[in-house]
Image (cartoon, rainbow over all chains, first blue to last red; front, side):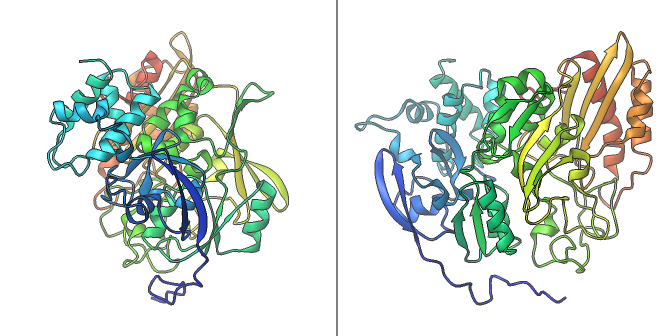
Length: 170
Length: 338
């Protein structure tokens, strides 16, 4: 089979210059020089040492990388950092204030809403987005609108209970 | 992912100029599908043209009583837009049946139309795939083809179009507005996506130097009698095995007009004029619906692992039309099918 197209293993294209961007991460403005292909997830973890946001599948299927961009929950693994120049980013590290846990963080502890904890930062950021959206009123709706966050330990019932607590439903 | 250059388009004309000047470039908006495919080495653009900041983000009423949806309106915003929720609940329902809320927050209207198949062989660069590598062969024909098409297939390709939103847009007779070097043109939704034929590498009739600017909905929204029913391997966040969008206009028990569009069964959202004609003037009951389903599926062809889709589609068509006729559309949060 003749493969005429350039493969990843071929000589790379000419490496473009890095691009200067500004992100406000958890209230702090950060100036960064990033390659065009650097994802927001990699910027957070590798450039800013904010390793609370997790890389699970790296393909938008697991939700572990969920953060809020300008108040909306998104998958940071499928987001190019250069495209978010000027945006406000909220990660799990930005939720507690003055050493006091965010109500969602406390609720996850209260309800034992995790086992290994790897999906938890994404679950909590996703729940923060869900509550801000205001579309989920029932447990069914919470489950449906949290379906982008996979928990392989299977803590789903307790995650729903934790979210309901913060929504004032329990 | 290969290295690539990055540039931002300042307006639609600028975007068209940039893509015309560089055939190896691609537009990027939400990026949910393109970045995934670039990570898999399936898409290898040497330049990304960022169109995410173009002013194509509004939903406006048209002079004809319809809606014009900017190509960059995020899927979630569209589903929750008051005019869509009120007048085109079929569209809202279909959007909310697809992907996850994070992805819907990112994905654009235009990008949803242009997303590519999730055929595993298209994604796997170690296997032949006529869509990815024209002329290399189709691995799905004799491979794991449980998710694949049963209608409109060709020797070259049996992939399905993955969108839920597009199934509703097909049922609603939407129009796609595009811009290119020669100006603007409008494409009827039925003519936008293609069947695979001998050129499965081309998903749509959009030209390489054209950009989607808007999707327009006609005035009729069928807000009273509609349903979108999606059957999949898990209850949420999975692609359709079979999905059906149905709308009916009733006069008492008599069907004045009905529309049926299917997802998960073909290379494009599937409509069948003959099946819809067979519903017109008939009494809305399961016998009528089953007859239309038989007509729609008369040429359906199963492969090794997906022949079950033919009977599944028959049942989902009948159930969805029943839900539409009763005025009890499928809920996308309570998944019990009634």
